[in-house]
Amino acid sequence: MKRPPSGGLFLAGMAGSGYRLGMADSEFSPAPMPEDDSLRTRFSWFLSGVSMIFSIPAFILMTAHVGFAGFASENGVSLLQAAFMVATIWALPANIVLIGAISGGYSLLGAAIAVGLSSIRLMPMVAAFIPEMRGPNTRRITLLFLSHFIAVTAWVMGMERFQHIPRNMRVSYFAGLGMTLTVTNTLVVALVYFLSTDFPPIVFAGLFFLTPMYFLTSLWGSARDRSIHVAMVSGLLLFPLVHHLAPAYDLLLTGFAGGGVTMGYVRWARARA
Amino acid sequence: MTWHSLTDWWWPYIFILLAGWLPTDIWRYLGVFVGGKVREDSDALIAVRAVATALVAGVIAQLILYPSGSLAESSVFLRIGAAAAGFLAYLRLGRHVIVSVIAAEIVLITGLFLDF
Image 1 (tube, rainbow over the protein chains, first blue to last red):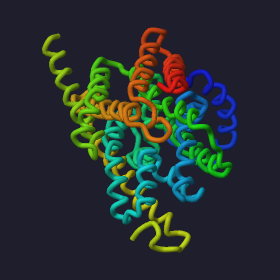
Image 2 (cartoon, rainbow over the protein chains, first blue to last red):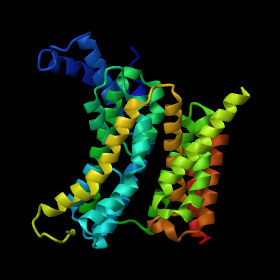
Image 3 (cartoon, helix red, strand yellow):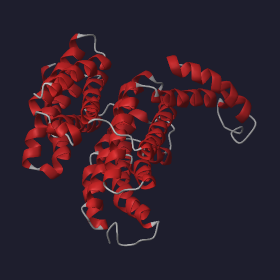
Image 4 (cartoon, rainbow over the protein chains, first blue to last red):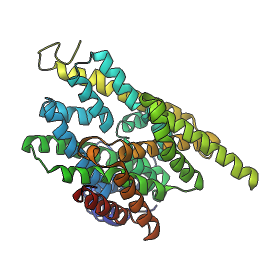
């Protein structure tokens, strides 16, 4: 069995032994199969996912949430409400749309429709993520629970890291990664709101630009074949056009149009080969 | 029913769950069911991945072309230029995310200071 790399190994080594002492003869002991080693390995991969909180993308996501805390307080949403939004919705665009709908005096139904439109994009993202993440025996209920933690940053991180992680350990790894990202950013929003930290606009401008640069480079770097690059370029080029034609559905339509272009490319490349 | 309809302490939380959590997680759950049906190494998976990738690329374009907050007042050409510089630095200087971020930020911050 492969062991988690670098930082994770250190954490995993420390906590792994403690885990065995604490858990081996308690509630998990009647586990079937090669239980002890499998559970330990699983937990060390979970910790390896947790340790990704100390990474550049996690830091970038936290800076985006610093901005969100300020946005929430400007719009009269309380500290607890803002933190509750981050934890339960866990999609920054949906949070911003919801606060916009609240301050615009939308009805419950109107707000739900606006948020639902901004969140449709999660459906194809999760559909592409699940076949990469699931192990041979992963239960659907586990996937449904973990799907809550899939948002753009976690998606890009997972798609990039999964290829280096044994298939049956990916669920554990993502559980650590996804839940830690969500919990930490919920706390970041509460803390920044509480301290009402303020920065000059140029700092925010600089921070906001980190997110697209991270998505751009790491998505490009995570591609295992050319089709991903074709999909990226077509998405980047099609978006302004689609946004101009149908602003309400721009992301979703960009996805389908870019996906269509990519499948055309895949057919063409196969015919040529 | 709006955010201010009820003054009870719990009402905003119900509002967040019904207008925020439900219409967001329902798409994630649907994604799990769709993703559960696609086989590994099938054309369907290539297609789903292509749609998702193009969509995330759309998110990137949105963040660069139509940003909100403090970036909204900067010139769109400055933002495109900064992103292009960052991406070029990534491709040419050993494919490191941090190199690309630094290159893009140098161009962006310089441009903002020069009021470009």
